[in-house]
Image (cartoon, rainbow, N blue to C red):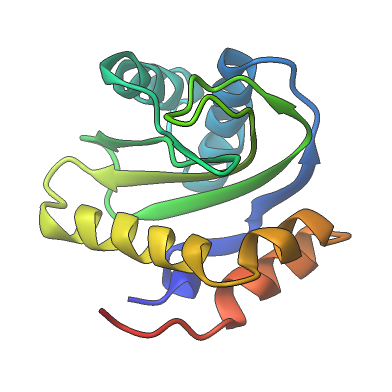
Length: 153
């Protein structure tokens, strides 16, 4: 599974300006709604429900909010750098400035987990988070995420 199959150029946002975790989730939902034609409120509610189970802030300034939606027919990913880090109640207590969101169909099963694994491996690649933080545009972010080879595991 390649990130280019999950992530489209219009699903990548450089320097999103938000002041809180809730506002970040609202903006993610707005972008996801534009890219997938899903109702924005449905996406937001799904992401918020998942966050209530436990923060998707995984550490090192990274969050991977995700959720499943009945009305979605294929996996879709979205990537954001934030203009300023926000508290995401991350496992390490550090604020988040890189967000990789994933939406999956309700019946995605193992594909949802494989996609989350792929995202995690890309984000753990040496130098990746630094390169993403230094990127100057959404296009550069997209290229970094989709054109960087990552070994299969």
